[in-house]
Every structure is written in C-alpha cells, then in structure tokens.
Length: 295
Image (cartoon, rainbow, N blue to C red):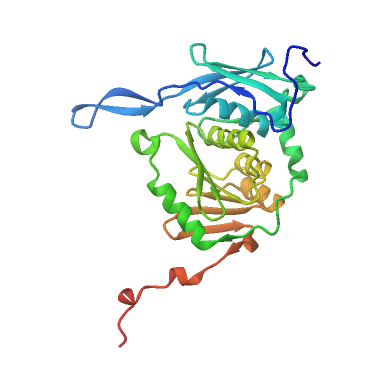
C-alpha cells in the first residue's frame, strides 16, 4: 500500500541514508607463550537487526564499516527489493544495534518469501532465503566479456598492498570491486565475506553501477552463495586467494562465470569460464639474468 506521506518516486532517486560510524577494532590485553603482557587490536563484531517497514527481518553480525550499504546490498541480493527507487530511507542507529528501512510499497508476500532459509558455509555463517537458488536459471552473464592475465596480476598486487583491518587485527574477510582494466573501485571488509559482498552490492546499487565490465575479488572461499551474489550483480569474473567448493564451481559453470582461485603472486587456477581469460604467456617468461647459462 502506498503511503501518502512519502515523497514521489523519481528515476535514479537515491534513498535517504544515515552516516553511522562505529569503531572497527577493539584493544584487548593478552599474554604470549612466555607470559609476557601486551595489547593487541581485534576486529569489532556487533549485531545489526534489520527492520523493513517496522517488521524485523534478520540480524546480521557485522564489523560495522558500511552498515547502510550492507543493508541495501542484503535486500538486493536476497531479491526482496527490486529497485533502488523503492527504498525511501535507510537509517542505522548503533545505540540500539538496528537499522530501519522504509520502502515505498512494502515487500510483497514477505512472510512466504522469507519463510525458508538456507544456512550457508563459512565464517560468520550467512544465510540466504531458499527461493534464491530458483532464480539462478534466469541469470545470463555477458559472453563477450574478457579479462587479461596482466589485469589479474594487477588486481592481486593491489590487494596485497591495500591497507586493511586484516593487516592490523586479522580475523576479517575483504571483498573488492575492480574495473576490467584493474582499477580498484570499492574495498570492504567484514567479519563474513557474505557481508562484504552485500556491502559492495549496495554501493553499486546506490551508484547505478552495472557489473558486466567489472571484476570481483574476495579473500574468502568461492562458495555457491558468493557465486550467486556475484552473478546477480552481473559480474562475469570472480577471483579469490582461496579455493572453491563443488557447488560454487557448479553454479559458476551454470551461469557462465569465470572463476579464478588460489590467486597469489603470478599463480592462479582457472576453474570455469576459461574462454573469457586472455592469456599472456610472455608475462611468465624469465628475464635474461634469471635464465640458466648455456652449456
């Protein structure tokens, strides 16, 4: 039902967002193996209960670095809200660990659509609503998209040198969005990789950014949840310094996504979508000084 007090919907209208801030690390006292005392930083972790039109939907455990984008991305990736113009406001209040979302027309059949949940693998233990798997067949990624091997190396090196909570405190996952030339667009960390990917989805949604010429990177495993969310964002390339699961691989092949795992240094394993990667064998040739001397 439309609410007469809401502003009219406009094309490309951005929702009203809070700008909630929270400490991302917490200092604790520790003893090492010799009994020596010191202080270290550990990542923050806090609950964020999502209310949509005053109805409690879910509680997300999060680092709290980008709560508004996380909320939007969660709603988008769960296919609960179809258009950014349908969201009037997203207001985070850390004093009560909650976020209030106001939509223009509500969520149709919300009880039925959120009744079945699938608990996903990985740290932070994410969950997706069961109907999400049913929509995989509707996803079509661009077949003409290509990624150069040199860009893969540029992305890996950018992540290696990126300043991060992980380097300071550990125990978090990072996700990043790149252009297909290797330019870093967004970098988000959270206690679970599913939160970090949702936050980037929310940022893309806010900017009206399409995914067909983008590359997604995650420090976590390439599970079915990560592949589905990447595909929903329209991104044809998914990279990870970690491995993949059988279902992640199966879904990638189903939607036609290029899946690159174990990306470290100049090493990677291309598990799916091989036709999209442009190999550049000259990048792996040894420089003259490193070649063995002729006998």
